[in-house]
Length: 116
Length: 107
Image 1 (spheres, helix red, strand yellow):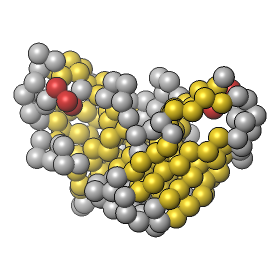
Image 2 (tube, rainbow over the protein chains, first blue to last red):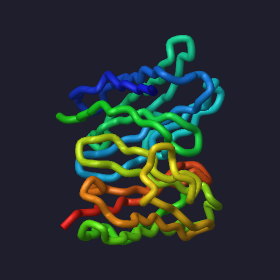
Image 3 (cartoon, rainbow over the protein chains, first blue to last red):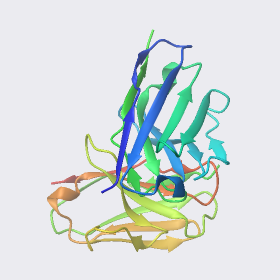
């Protein structure tokens, strides 16, 4: 059984930083690309970032480029999202998702609220 | 950026009815188009990958078709448990993008 468990969400002020983590189990983590996808309250899905299976390739949505950094630790089966200079518009549930092309498994998400 | 436009935004249907949701891409994504189901309070689940391949464990009433810019998700014989929002997603190019979603309500 595959598991993805996100953590690190919370309430923060604009301009501050937060680091999300996603712990994986039940599959060979080091063989798969991983993504972060977010969903603002009551809205649709927005892709945020992708990292290749070995961490050598990373891509970002324009809305977060230069502010967010995706990374992974294959020895600990975790993928992380460092979020800096947070904005009100970054308020969302953040999901990690497994796969490179299709997202074949998603975690339950962690809520990030940016509020003054 | 590839823009995905789904139609309709909302659909209300009775059990056993056939439901069709379309997804149109602003440029060709070949067959790199996937469909997800999201029920209230849950994370999305992969239904169909690469336009027409059913994901493991997905009921056979769900099917997908299309290629290039026009795609369809069909739910044959709608069931109460199918009440959800459905999203298409393209992986033909970066950035990955999603359609705006189609909410399916059961009458």
